[in-house]
Length: 75
Image (cartoon, rainbow, N blue to C red; front, side, top):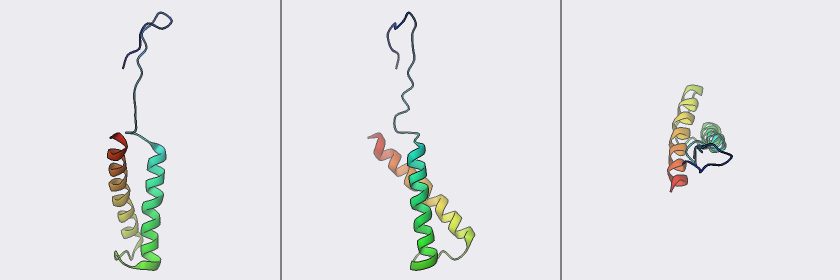
């Protein structure tokens, strides 16, 4: 998006919108890690037994939730 001549020069504004959001990433990472740890120590529903599985599931959940929330935020 380009603004008019303000102060004699053209100014370009980059509209980042809701596509890149560090706050959303931190929130989703915390939620995904919390669910994985809860399953590891309490629920045992997903079969998380090792630290490697915990980290793998955390990464998968984080990516999925982040993409999902980004799609919802862009609408």
